[in-house]
Length: 442
Image (cartoon, rainbow, N blue to C red; front, side):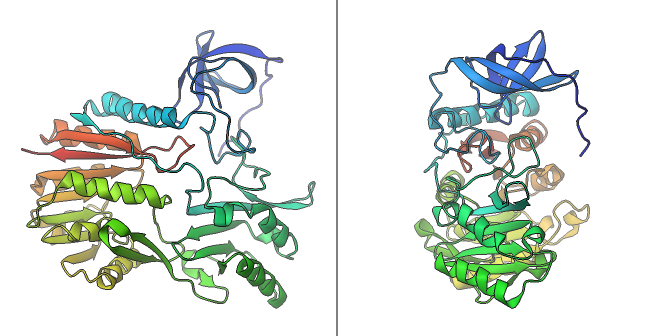
């Protein structure tokens, strides 16, 4: 990343009126015709700020005080808010956060997709604290503080925030960050332990310690004993993802979908949804929107370990899942067997590869298609999906911009109607927007 050139900044505190919020949740003010981004502010507020960065295109500032507060401003629930970059919207009421995310989705549809959903669904939401079950925590030994910090980066910098706890992490982990740092401080490799991956299942918690140097036998015992006291299972990673291995015991990580009578097993570094409550609501909404009658042939693209595939199979005649990660596909197959589901099949395929249309599954017709792509979206798949003749396409998205772009293709090139769309608050207190859209062809 290129370093920002330091410019002489105006000194002192300056007034500003916040006009709107940016896509990443920062307040937007217009000062002398130039956009200025000021975090932790809300539309309509009159504030005082000082400059932290200036360029020809835009400026950035740091909030000093609020002269006139928005009715949507609330007291942040975490003492580290404003310094830690893990959250950006704790100062905004929960209802306002969801409205902001819904507005961001609708704005993307209008500006990028030139489409409008026939129905805007109510946002899916759940408990805003202690929801996060997957996370990558930074670890850094700070000489000046003579401490090891564990957590997320400071807002707008590469430095780790000095936090003692995290209220959005699952409490089985979030309440122990300071103690975790203190334990790492006792290790000889404290400067060669850059991160910890967290994976919380229904009945187990795994902590993957990324190590750049070997641990001594006594240090392995230190980690094992510390984790045992908190019902964590420690794993070590000394290279790429394939080097992840248990320090001692193997953990069985699972999550369940009670409404579907399904249980999924996963490995600590597998992709799973971070918010189990929203995942359950998301699955229920997807099944409701698709409204399968039992005789349909369904295709699930970017299927992962079967999160959507298996619930779909409860309602369809057959479901075929496709995923680029071989290990996840094997996990999906095992989860189908574990749940006594025999009307599913799976393939491994890079869905962005130009050879994808040559696969046997890609040449077939389907009654419904579900897509759950990464942030980059599924533009390359749109012509192929359109040729499959599906009456219904359900698109689950983690970025409004690419969903809107792909919706433009489905609606304005291939004649689908976007009958429903709405957001899912998978990451409360952040500007991250997850959404779902249903496309139908009459």
